[in-house]
Image 1 (cartoon, rainbow, N blue to C red):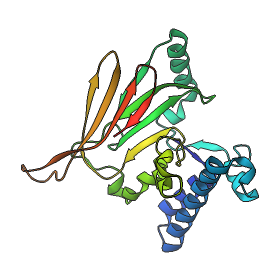
Image 2 (image 1 turned 120 degrees about the horizontal axis):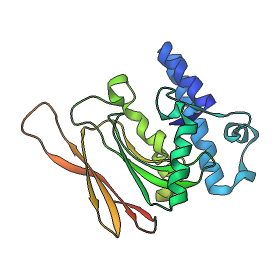
Image 3 (image 1 turned 90 degrees about the vertical axis):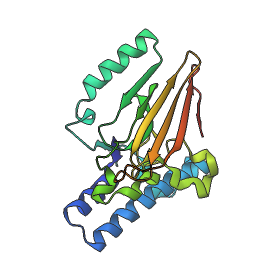
Image 4 (image 1 turned 180 degrees about the vertical axis):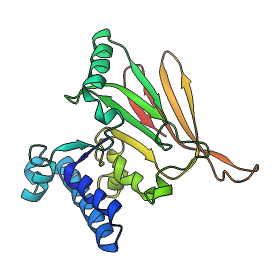
Length: 219
């Protein structure tokens, strides 16, 4: 997971000093960055203000790893695997779940070339982002916060804090049900309304389908 440095700096400040002022700084940094992405998506780079252009310029505001002890910290090894997959012409589907949260993302090389997709399941009972006060972060992470401005075109467009992230749920507990055929792979993110009772209701929060041609749809 890679963030622009300005957003990550604001977040780290809030984690170490969780004051109202720091939380407001984090919120403003996220809002400004998402607004810059929305402006570029809707009207092109020429419509960006100088400040927005600076936010999106990776030379002046580079993308930096979020977790150096995870895949973020091993870019060369990750790139070796992805280039091997690319050279073999494989349709890569990866499964994950270590963050305890649900997400769907593109898997891309260091050059930004998509070589596959990733389905990550939430945990069944173990807490996720919501346990550390980040339960409301999902819409900013995957860009769905921009739906009011851009409509459904914001879904799966890489307009969130994490470029490759197309769907995230950072609150609910449940599991991932995967259906694999020659024609498509469909991941259904199933969530339960409680993990504290033997009586519960399970519902599909999101279904993501990737066809053999690489087309992605959300339901």
